[in-house]
Amino acid sequence: MYQIVNQKTVDQNKTPAILKVSCFVGYIFVGITILMGLLFIVIAESPNTFRLFPEINFYVSLANGKISMNFALISLFLPVIAFFGLIQIWYQLKIGFWLFTVPKILLIALIFFLIDLPLIDIWYFTQPLLIIAFILIMLFGLNYRKMY
Image (cartoon, rainbow, N blue to C red; front, side, top):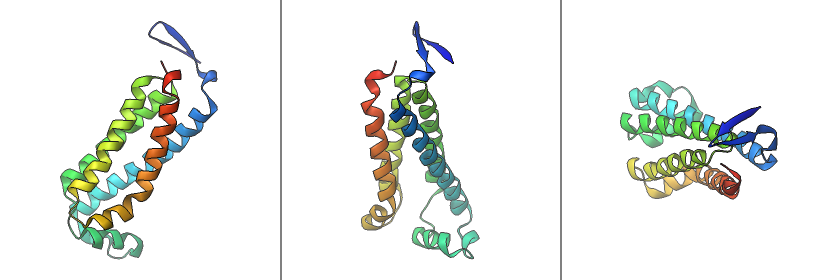
């Protein structure tokens, strides 16, 4: 499969293996963050919906109505932009790196600034997000020179 980009021909089969694996992990990661954004919308709309589910009820009781609808919509919109960035990274376009990196950094910053919880609680629940996002950004950054 070929695609013309800036007068260059990109051969899809020459995509580095580490970039393919990183994109696959990125798709799973962004899919989970999109699902979390949808969950935040439901929690912001009616926090009592999940009282019967103990796993989710813990997050709802922790937030205790402190997740606003604005944050919920932003937390859904930013991962969607990151998803389109991953598609661009798959085709080895440099703009994809920025479309993935900027929304992830903004989402992490918004979590720390817009959720009214103690900093230690936010840190505890965002560690996986921080670690995976940092690793993916580093892996995509290492392949940035090979992109068009």
